[in-house]
Length: 149
Image (cartoon, rainbow, N blue to C red; front, side):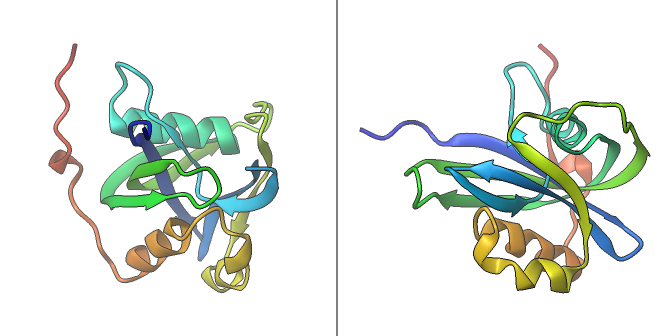
């Protein structure tokens, strides 16, 4: 029996033609990913995306648009991930903030640099969301409905 899909969030943050990415350890290997992570109980998707970006990169961001929902089953661990991806603006860097333990570093990369690392991306969603972003796909944040507890 398979476990339930994991609800995750990710942020596409762009500044000066570069995307904020993380180099991290996942399934025992070094990979690149957008700042991303799991939705916590009682948390909105937008709040989760902003929190995960801060925890993984030291950058405080503000979500401005919704990019889409992406589903992927990992060949490494068999887990199905349902990623809710947001476009966010960088607000400020908090250089003193300690990053999550699996994060090796936060880096700003051009799209061509990300494409060149395709074999080292955490999963196919990483490049797919950047491609969608570059095509101008956006949805308003009010597409996401959240009811307070």
